[in-house]
Image (tube, rainbow, N blue to C red; front, side, top):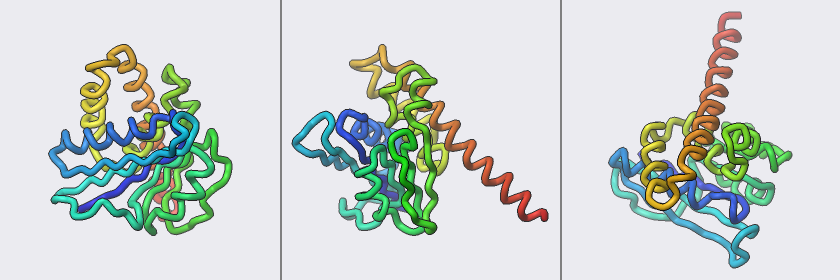
Length: 194
């Protein structure tokens, strides 16, 4: 199995960090990982993206023609990366900043109020961590414990003071993704029973 995830948005939204956390979490599960950052010269406020490829065997190529999932945190990223999600894939959209929908019916699109989730958990700057939590809750790409361990490893060294907020925001996003799954399961059971 090989899964590719694109994180995209404005520089300063923590996209590269979210990608690093996912990559570290996959490594914690002893899986193969590739992390590829891309960003414009504008730095904070410019465009930024990263691709994380997770595999059970060595990854043959860093090229992603169709992503298994994408996390888009701003409107330009939806326009650019929404079409790159493979049919049957997952698109996590920051509903706080992105009003438009992808218009696709062949993917799973989950609209997440990332800023509200981050704010409710203590730090509204952690929108990418909320989106990562929703992605994990929705797809189960890696286990939540692996993500929590990754956050502890990455933040514990230099930013231990930020760890508590990051863990809380991740939990909020995770719960949101899981709740969306539970709602769909209830609807499917109700529809199937009728």
